Image 1 (cartoon, rainbow, N blue to C red):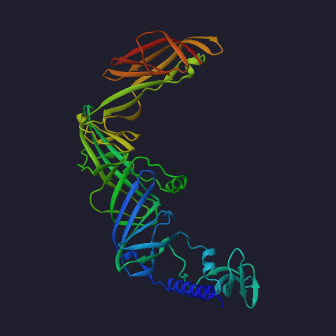
Image 2 (cartoon, rainbow, N blue to C red; image 1 turned 120 degrees about the vertical axis):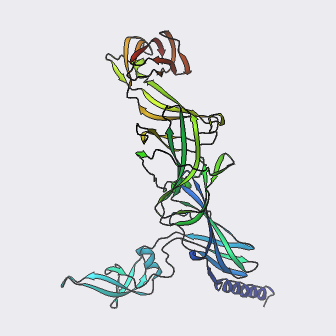
Image 3 (cartoon, rainbow, N blue to C red; image 1 turned 180 degrees about the vertical axis):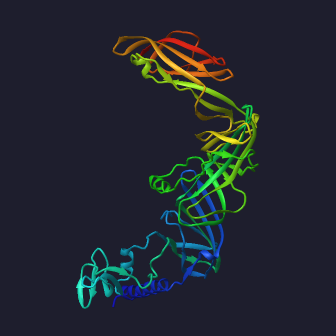
Length: 476
């Protein structure tokens, strides 16, 4: 026998012993009932980072550790286990749900029942059969005969131990010493948040109060009790597979038509900047039940100066085509306020829905508009659209049109603004003019606010009218 053969034999014996030792590694379960702490970092885009700390009895050496009870929307990669002196040798997240195929696969070699209707009597009966193989190459032995189809609907005596009702993390770990707790961090879809703003106008319309709530939506079938919650405001970059996961997050919210005369005083959530984003830490432990939306105070501001603006946007087709008839136009209205400390605000405003309330004669607040807000950083101006103005209207007339060439036109326009209210208003008229253009004449000087836009600020008296006229040559 050569010298190499004893060495090879010894190596194989050692390898077999190692494999046997690993095969006999104890299984330790970190049960949901042994949870010691839960923390969530929830993102705008419909995902969350969950950190779940549980008590364990992990012995020194190798063991198989299991974390059951994860949400069905859990991402099957990216989970991280943290425990003092513990190394993860292998890990996986089992996201397979109990279906007929998974159950049949788990029960190969065993006998189960099949429920079917007796065609002669119409009675429901159960026959027994042994599974020889599972789909796609199904074989079932019934009464000593082999079938390639199920003889009826499968009826299971019990749930196989290898099949879970919820996803679970499992890993082969090696501990330097006995460990009493471990934390599993994982990414999941089905959780998201957005800001909900209640904006209350003062009776004179010159100031407003802002109360912001964070709406936390749990679209999963898993509850998150007594969680420490942080919220990330901003759109973080994600790979395409994560974007698909985030799309699972639902959208929840509360529609409000009228509110009490006074808004509740709310405390600001703690805020810090993390990279290019803002991180809000909610006060206290938060319960987020499965399939529910809960709201938590986010920030508040009082006495913010505000301006009500009226504006009229013109479509570009009136420049390039002949329009023979008068066209009614819609004057829009919006609130404008500055996000600055001088305006008693100066706080980053995360994207969300803003609902505007104003007091009626009795002092009760009524909903007067709602709009979507993008992220509004400090120092920026916020605009909240309220919809079409009722008392301020506009009519557009094309008074002249010439097509100078295939790509050049000259047109004249008259815009009449009417104000039916008891107070004068200021209307910002913005006309969209694409291509190269030249203003030939106008009833008042215009501002070239953009390369494709001319604008006028027009004062319209109470119960009166005002006009803007202009002639423009455009090449496109």
